[in-house]
Length: 433
Image 1 (tube, rainbow, N blue to C red):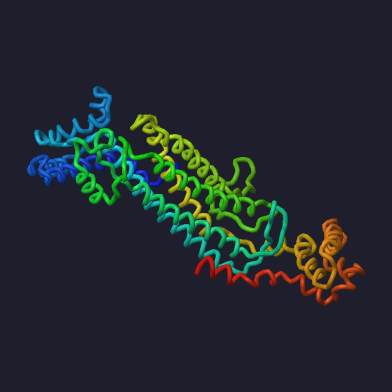
Image 2 (image 1 turned 90 degrees about the horizontal axis):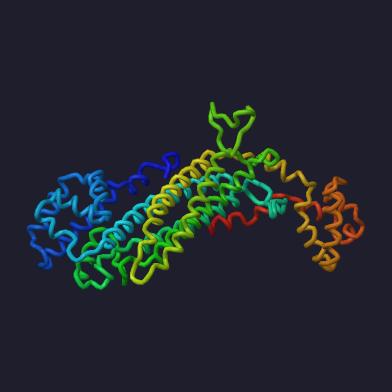
């Protein structure tokens, strides 16, 4: 992960210092449990904690040892032996490398998810504040990019609040599923390590025990986890894309904040570009790129192979660090978003009232005209309004078939934008409670 898109708290979770510290805690907690079971001397477990805690694990030394052993976990336990002394012979009793590596990854992903959940909470707070601010700010709703009917900017934002509420719930579920401990030894049979050791380590690290492992934690858990991150990223892209569209010059209903001294183009001094939202879209693509490899990691050979390991060294840090940064960036965009109700009204008025065509259609059907005939009447006049021949209201009033069925004053009442806000309170009650 490049520093440009990394925040310190999340980045620290994936540092070698953090990883090897978690390795040590797993080994030390396991030693405590084994001491209680009489597998190793209690004094040895005490020394492991005391000397391991006091001495700083030297990452460079582990890497130096690994050059010879060509085995990361053995390099780690060898370095522990240098720090702890003779009692280190009781470290890693009956355990296999994946007990340490997989449990460490679970701890890292759980901690990363706590940050991501807090990120989503901040985004939800920003969206809610702006939604309430613009609860009744009229704007045009669009389908296929074309004007449909009026809505409010608050309702538009409420859809994102509901979506990110679901995103938060998915992250909570993903954390629960991934926060799993495995201390079951070679082939996952517990032949050389008592299941009570696993239970003790799990409790100390705030994890659940893996129901049944092979020699690894099953990777369907990880696949579901990274798929969840991908869905969150897609929701972010949806909001960022909406902001990008709204900032287009011919729309200009909302704009990213543009700081004093900021430049939009090296060539064109007038430019104000939605660069932060565009950045979020790009980062969302990177998060989603981690999903397919996670899915492909599920099908390991027999009780285990190593094909997942290199993948997870990339996607664990990359997906969580990137999503953390992107969520924080999107929150800032929403908080500082410049909303333009004047442009919203201008765009509402842009198409000569054709956005009220459905109300005219319904009025004609209620007046006794067959729906197909009513549709043709309204559509023909709407097409003339599109062509600039007049407003839809005036054209409908002038149409003898329409005026015969619906009085002019009743037609006029149907061209009130505020009509479309009548259920905003209901929508907000559903979304915000």
